[in-house]
Amino acid sequence: MFAELTGLEIGSIVTGFVFGAIGLLIAGVAAFKKTEVAVDQPVSVEVIEALHKQFAAKNEFDKHVLENSDRHALIFAKIEAAELRSRTDLEKAVTAIQEDRRRTWDKLENRNERIMFALGKIAAAQGIDITPTE
Image 1 (cartoon, one colour):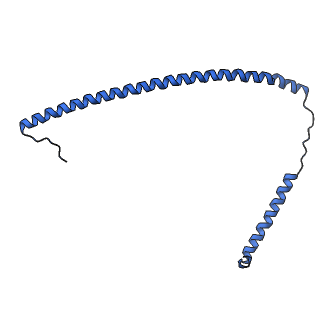
Image 2: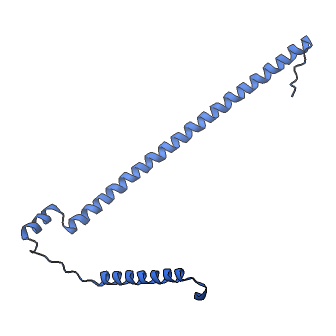
């Protein structure tokens, strides 16, 4: 297999292996390099007290989450009920519009049939052929 390769191709393959090995070496050094974090001074008591004043304690936070969960459940239940009512009202309105449209169409169709019947009688009386042609 390698006997069929030209010198340029073999050189390219070797160069690729060399650069790959260098990349692995650099990645290994970076992964195992130890860094130390230096802390110049400990966190002062004032900062800790300010944080305790600014943020709630864990038990207060959990109580607040529980209260909000109940309130949110109530809000979402009201939203669902309003959405259901709106959807029902909309379906009723659409049904009423469709029924009205159907009645109007039936009236127009009935009138059209009567007009066509009358036109046929008039045309027959005048001896005119009004049959549609294609």
